[in-house]
Amino acid sequence: MQLFDLHTHTTYSDGRNTPEEMIHEALERGLMCFGISDHSPTPFDPPGGMPEGTEKLYAEAIRKLKARFDGKIRLLLGLEQDFWSPAYEETYDYIIGSVHYLYKNGSYLAVDDTPEIFEEGVDRLFGGDFLTACECFYDQEAAVAEKTGCGIIGHFDLITKFNEKHHFFDTEASRYKAARKKALDRLLEKPVIFEINTGGLFRGWKTGTYPDDETIRYIRENGGRVILSSDAHRKEAIAWQFEELSGKLKM
Ligand SMILES: [Zn+2]
Ligand SMILES: [Zn+2]
Image (tube, protein in one colour):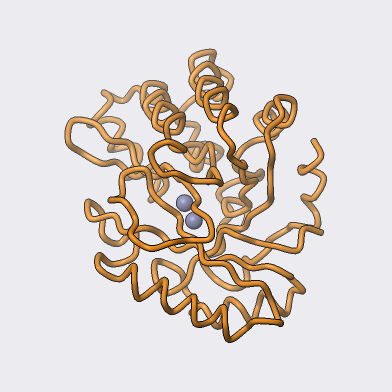
C-alpha cells in the first residue's frame, strides 16, 4: 500500500480535525509520510479557504509539529492552492493546484459545493449549457500548473462531482472529451504529478475516483505520474481505500 497521503485538511481551513488529531490517525494507519495541505484563502468565497491573514499562523503551526513528530513520521507542509486565490506568501514543501470555481462575468461559481448551487450557477452564467461550463473548467485546469506553481494536480475532473447522481452533462460527449484532453495534454508537458483522489468516494458522491479510469489510463500511457490521495477533511478519511485502489497506480 502507498504509505503516504499528501492531500488532507485540518481546522486551519475546512477540515473537522486538528493537525495533531490528523497526524495521530496517520500514525495509527502506519503511514510513513503525511502531508497537510489546507485550502488557500479564497476572499471571494471566505468559507471555502483558510481565513485571510492566517497563512503564516498555519505554516508556523505545521512547522512546529514537523519538529515535534520528527522520527515518528515524516510530516510535510503543503497547501492546496486554488486557481483564483491570491499568491501564497509562505514556503511550502509542495503545492497542490486545484480548480474549485468557474469564473465568468465577474462571478465565481463553486463546482463542488452543492448540486443546487452548481446547477443554478450554470443556468445563470452559462445559460444552462453544462458542456460550456465544462469547457470553461478545463480551460482553467489546463493553466493550473502555471497559475499556481503546483507540483501536484488536485482532483483533475472535480466538475464531475455531482454528475453520477444528477447527470448534468454527458462525459461521453465529444465536446467534453475534447476539453478534457486539451487540458491533459497541456499538463502532461509539465513536471507535475496527478493525484488519484478518493475524496468523492469517501463522501459518497462518486463510485470512482477523480479522475476517472479512462483519464488515469491516458495519463499513464502518455508518461504522466500518479499518486493516491484522500483529500481527507476528517481523520476517518485518511488514506481512504488506498489498499483497494492501489491497482490504479499501475493502470
Ligand atoms: Zn480541492
Ligand atoms: Zn482538498
